[in-house]
Length: 231
Image (cartoon, rainbow, N blue to C red):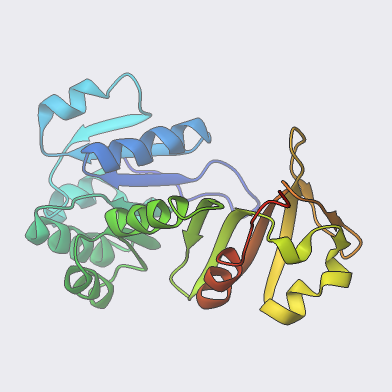
């Protein structure tokens, strides 16, 4: 089942997903919707059969078995996602095996910071903490005025929030939010209207939603600004 790597001029990428639990299955389904060629493997035959009709390729295989991975031709895939969580040993060995097989980029799920550090040290290019990330998003979403929040590994964040009082009835240039708060207003959504890109001349009104980006601390301080109604 060897595969050719993606044509550098473009084309359909091939992504291998190891583990068909809830997280791995969600990754697979999202990739398939994007038109990505997915090779999903799991040691549980029942899981593989369950998703055989939904995913591009499903195989019963052990990602910790180097010979099995070579037979599958995993060295020719563009990227791999190790979606194993609770079995730390299998997670670690899978990353080692895929790294040694020559997979270009490896994304691996971790359940603890220590687990993540180990994965990064043995070949994972990106370590993912699904529970931690979702916990952060929910914590910010339950904060008044924040509709969504996403934090990246490099201390960068994006948030969707209601416009704070100090921005009302003024253009972004006049309110000086970029200079005063060291954040960038990327988009704006008036009530009942779609999001549009924000420019310095964009005027913000009460009830508007903003999409802002910047360093984590700056974004968190901005979304915490007063949003009290004029009433």
